[in-house]
Length: 491
Ligand SMILES: *Cc1c(COP(=O)(O)O)cnc(C)c1O
Image 1 (cartoon, rainbow, N blue to C red):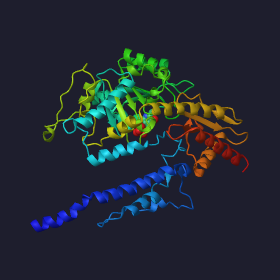
Image 2: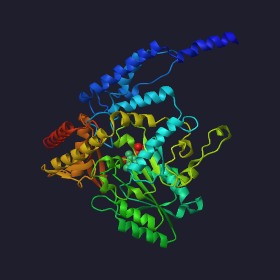
Image 3: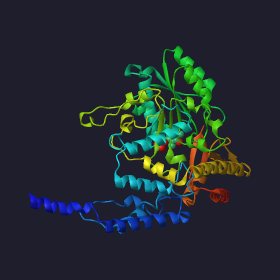
């Protein structure tokens, strides 16, 4: 038995590399990361599979063997088969969907969280890690004007944050399976699809969904909301949840939160504000009127991997009703008996020791707080505020530029940093023309834009969110758009 153990130990100890080995790996990874970042400006924002790069990424098989592999070879596999294909989310030219960029020190935070393997799920296991995450959430609650006894959870993204909010609303409103067919949710056509997905995942797919009418800027019409709720109540239905969006994904539109909040409160509905994209613009001075009423919401979704520029994998949900959040998510298990935390009373200050595992579906989780805290502390808040304000102004600049150009049509004046445009040619069908235009822009790949359909009209979307995107990149984008328009017209 001892001989066998010795043999196994000698092999297993390979999982504990020496400090010389660690340093060597470290240098190789740091070198790779530096090359990647230093050459970012020259790299494509998007590389589509074409005949001269016939799907190199798709054919490659990341196979596993018994033997060890040198790191250098693995890094070149990453470079060749991952980092050169598809969208480059770190690129300043990525202005499709909602980019974020990925601030560098977040990677160092992830590194530290992984090396120490700190467990941030329950207070008992790491009071420091749980405090850090809860302090970040408390800061977000303060930013949104939530009362001191609110709570929050760092999620993997906005979709899970929205799901957590809906599940909590379902519990808080005491909906039971027999009620689901009569339960009503209010959204607009512009609501992010993760809300519908969350309704389905939370077991509510039989509920009624009302798409409330919107105004010319794609914001929800409170009068229409009010009327629909009243009609539904008369029919004996159970209106229970309103989703308002602060910064829609399509056009960055802001629903009139304050008016919606009044209706929600009068009629006792749960108001959720999906501010996954727009939320952190509250850091910009002068933006508070757009957020008016957000403090009256019952729950808010934020996405630090969008407007705090973090790498993908960090969202947040803020919830006022701690009791409902706990009722929806808490657990008890014999093997966890050492970890059960005290539950604070309502009215108590933000509970810094509440365990994430008691208020989310997760038990064991990534210590996400570290990747968020480290950049915010290292840089301070000022450059984040500046980058966000810069994005708002760049979007105004782009909007005015495109609006002044012959043949271009722009959407509603941007409220945040997403804007839509299309080229309306004299003879060709505009939808067909703009489909061709987006295809050409994407094939070129120096910048990446995406598109959307609003009332059957095909628009090209520009989302200026990446912290690396500055004036020179926006100017370059305008040139590329004009060049491709010309190329289609003259072909
Ligand atoms: C991005 C987004 C989501 C989804 O968030 P993920 O982080 O992608 O899961 C939800 N709502 C809005 C408004 C968004 O912009």
